[in-house]
Amino acid sequence: MNVSDPVSSDSASTSAPGTLSSSASDSTVSASAPVAPSPRLRAALETFPPYIPGKPPRQVEGLQSFKLSSNENFLPPLPAVLETMVAHAANPALYPDDAALALRQGLADRLGVGLDQLVVTTGASELLVALTQITSDATTEAIYPWPSFEMYPQTTGLVGSGRHEVPLTAEGLHDLDAMAAVITEDTRLIILCSPNNPTGPVLRDDEVRAFLDKVPDHVLVALDEAYWEFATVPGRADGLGLVRDYPNLVLLRTFSKAHGLAGLRVGYAVAHPPVIAGLLKAVIPFGVTDLSQAAALESLNHWDEVLERAGEIAQTRDAFAAALREQGWEVPEAQANYVWLPLGEKSDAFEDACVEQAVAVRNLGAGVRISIGEDEALARVLEIAERFHIEHFED
Image (tube, rainbow, N blue to C red; front, side):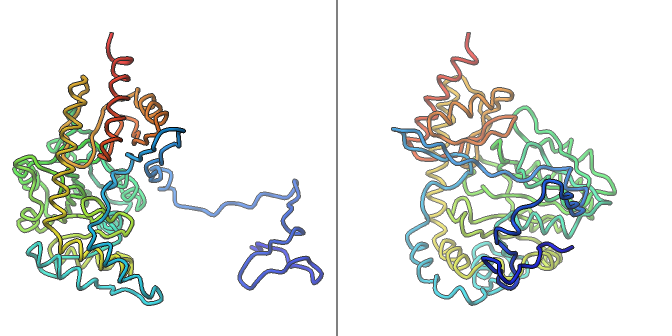
């Protein structure tokens, strides 16, 4: 199909090779011109919504604005990491190490696994895309809890897979018995999320083992541990220990949250070699930049400091959740860097109340997720929450 008319020799402007003309003479389309047919896209695209990121805060005169809608680490990366980033911002004309060998070796040494058990990607989101590509198609089914991370329906839906969204319990927990009950011969992928995003509880190690014992060998199970560093409750699932014992389990982790490197897009998977070999065929070549690899490795070298800061955020989270409960809110177990309020139909009103006070939170329909941020931000949310609870829940 011809997408632009030829430009006459006396036109006021000409197009560079490979570009469309921007002259005034061809920018006006007759009202009677037929509408060009749209390209035929896959029907599966109509079965799931696009991923919608957390909104930025509204600017309100006299108030500092706070973004508590994307679970970002409000603390900057460690000083040594920032110095490394400056040192590696040299020549963007060169491709990075596609194998991410130095970073993978650092992870292997830290986690006690082999190089052939690791793959590094542009965030854990790319891992989810790759996992569905190597396991699923229109003839298969995927199972995951709901509500959970919005990428699950997107990535499984994109390949046309059938989907079982298994409702969480009233406490925001995985219903593992219900998930096991819907496994069929067509099931190829199961996703678990611990701590669960957006509700916050973690899976316990014994319950995950009992669940995995019920899963057929042909089904790949992904354990999404994007927020594992913030979890403090005893008995929580040990992803690394589980991977060692179950060949059909893959562990997903990221440098975005506790390490504070969300903008650099670095994630990794730990699994048995056959699963990693499959993922390597599906991930994007040269996806993780040299700068990102170097920063992640430097942050990994300061593991104890990263975990210490994650522990401080967890303490702030616990205090924030306790303050909400004192106001009368029902807050599920919070084990990540956010707190969940199951507001239901009042979610829009609560979000609006926060917006008016220059605070962005994440409205997910069934409730509102509030990321842990600066003390001033959380104090303002507590004031909003107290007024809201009195107005909407108390006689």
